[in-house]
Amino acid sequence: MGPAPGLKRNRQPGDGTVMSRATVRASIPLAVRLLAFAAVAVALAAGTLLFGRISDEASVSMGLTAAWFGVVFAACGALALRRRELLLPLGAGYGAVAIAVAVLVIAPTLFDREVNERVVTGTPASAAEPAGPTGPSQPVGNVQLAAGGFVAVAHEGQGRAAVVELPGGARKLTLTDFETDAGPDLRLYVSTGDPAEGELGDFVDLGALKGNVGNQQYDLQRDLDIARHSTVVVWCRAFSVAFTSARLERS
Image (tube, rainbow, N blue to C red; front, side, top):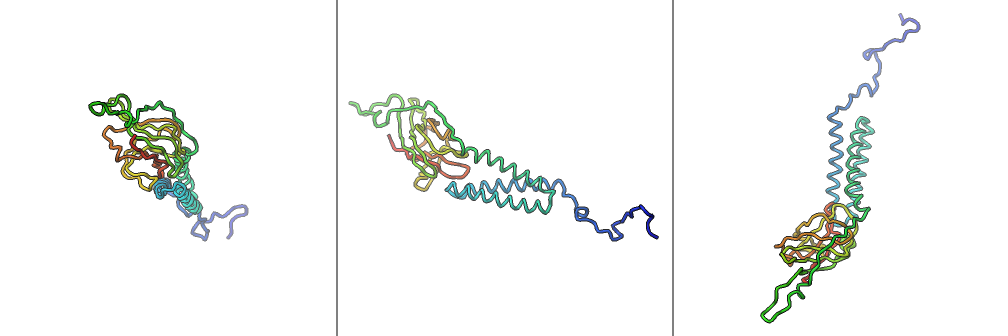
């Protein structure tokens, strides 16, 4: 006997009703969603570090990094199409790293940072020690021990670097009329090799470059052998590439 008129039969799964895929598929646990977020973030961050340091050519490193972002984006899109529940964690992980890279890596290349410090100067060492009747006299005042001009490596560079010793023995490294391109995480090194000739060698990190334009100075160790550490290098730590360098010659 059939159902009464106006009544709809409530069919059960066991009586031949076909269940939809959305009903059968279980929801993705929160732990898996968090893992998807972390996996995307780690993959992008690791790729940025790896490809950013894989070549001395900044354009090659940046091109490989951009390609890696494209690969991860495509993989995330394909996975999100299969499981839409993963769209939010995958997109959040991708977006978080993309924003961080844009702020920390891309933005610093767009704007110059200009400084204009008052830097010390000195009399060249060769002129500060004239021979007296009983031998060389002791220099008085600041003495410029060495100096050299910046030349292009991966980027253009101009200006002059000099090592100046103060009367008390302290030493300063000065950059005057200095200019190079803006870039991410720029550091100032004094090194045993010259990247303009293909080798950085051992180096001493003097800290972050204060500005890619303008006069500035840095503290040097008193016992640093500037005959050995004889090259000043502006180094991009994000992409492991030398921007510009200056070979120091005795003044």
